[in-house]
Image 1 (cartoon, one colour):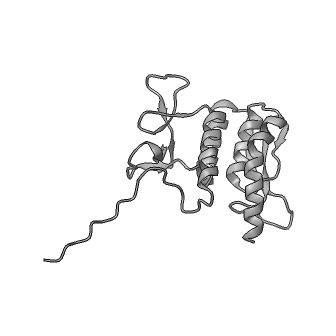
Image 2 (image 1 turned 45 degrees about the horizontal axis):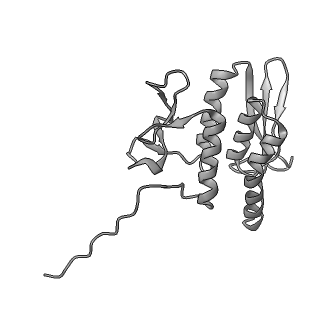
Image 3 (image 1 turned 180 degrees about the vertical axis):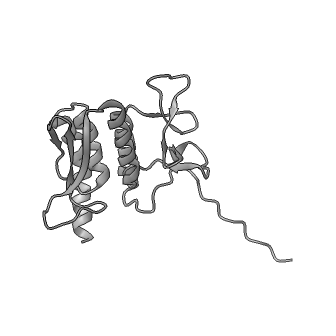
Length: 184
């Protein structure tokens, strides 16, 4: 009987979105998101909000799935890989939850394209505008990726200075500009 080949097993750690063009930058973005939002991962890799109750933290769910940092074990069917840089839906949902819980005075947030002749689609060069009930407005700088726009919006609402924001976001902006201009 001929010998069967053993199936090649791939590591289930460090899984990224199919759209991931820079895994190192993606990992760095995860750390920045966790630092800015105050979220953390538990011993099994699930993303949690442990600020209110560290013994029984709230698990972060997006669209009915639990967020999971993949370096911590096997991903299950009810897990969503925590790759916020390459999955703008994660950043959008985290931002919506944050605004609802921490800034109820905000009445609208919207992504706009930098060019008035362009309709904003996923990862269109543009910005996020945040509108308060009293008419006040916060506008982020222009970024290529929606995820980066939302991270700046988080940072602006947390009253971080322009220098702090630039220090965090410059590395993403440089990579994104090169990548998007090369892939026009």
